[in-house]
Length: 205
Image (cartoon, rainbow, N blue to C red; front, top):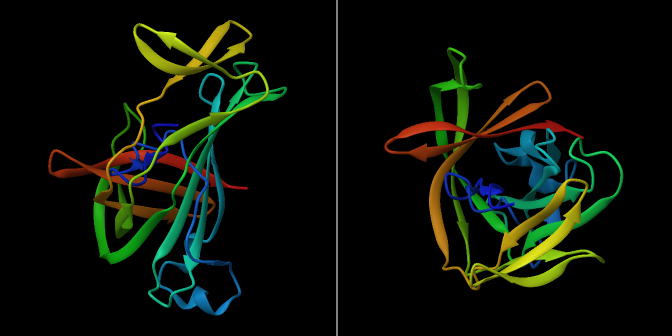
């Protein structure tokens, strides 16, 4: 889930790679007045591919405060089986929501796969921010244990266990990032060493 916050840390998807919960303003979904935002095309529920037991979901809505900003709620699910079939044994979230403030658009060359040539993407840049937050992991079989002197949430999976470290309260963040849409594919990008790079790839549910 700590990858989930990379939507924030470039994607505090870089963070989120464990998120959800809490909240402030009520969300406005597609078709509501808030969808006049230039970012309205991103409204919906998005899901990543399975990554060895783990799958990320990102829900995007328009904030109801008239700012045109997005409200992003990332969550992570851990499945008992490595191919993400069968039951979900743990859900990862954060106790605050991410706000994405529009910051213009730009054409960027982004590598969409590790060994692929860079592809030109029209990116809607956003400044993502989140107040102080904590990660949390829930599930009926989740155990809170000490590993290497640090607290972890662990859950049994078919080939061992899956653990997420509890790092306690994290400071508020505000970081540059971006979103790009190609059909039903959503790409989030993050700023890394002065250049924008791919963070996450989602498809619309």
